[in-house]
Length: 134
Image (cartoon, rainbow, N blue to C red; front, side, top):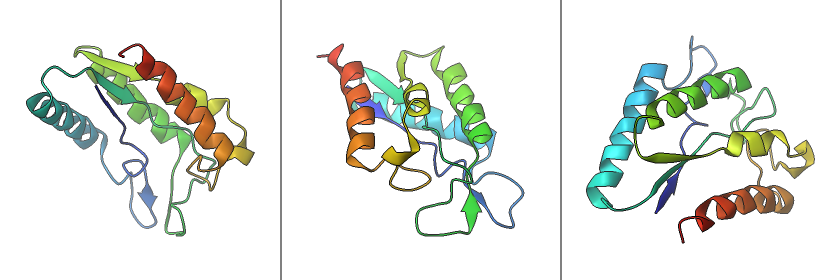
């Protein structure tokens, strides 16, 4: 099985730019390229995509204050992924919904759930998803 995620850097809005780091059409193209590459190297693998998790806005990049992330962008990019995957044999691991239930105290910064509690909750959700493939 291949469980993967992209998104937090794609939705980063660098100060001075008019939009997200990766445009919506480019994001969809990158997801499709990743899927094709996974299929090339792992043709029989179950493919599982984890939706991008919620940020604490303004969702600055770790250690820098040159941009921000917005949950409204993450929701749109997750929807792009969901639309793409519905026509392909890809399972969605809805970590977005899991992240909505996690307290902000489980965050190590505005973007990541890098505390012991955050890692336990998100890691547990991934394990529950993957168990069905073992």
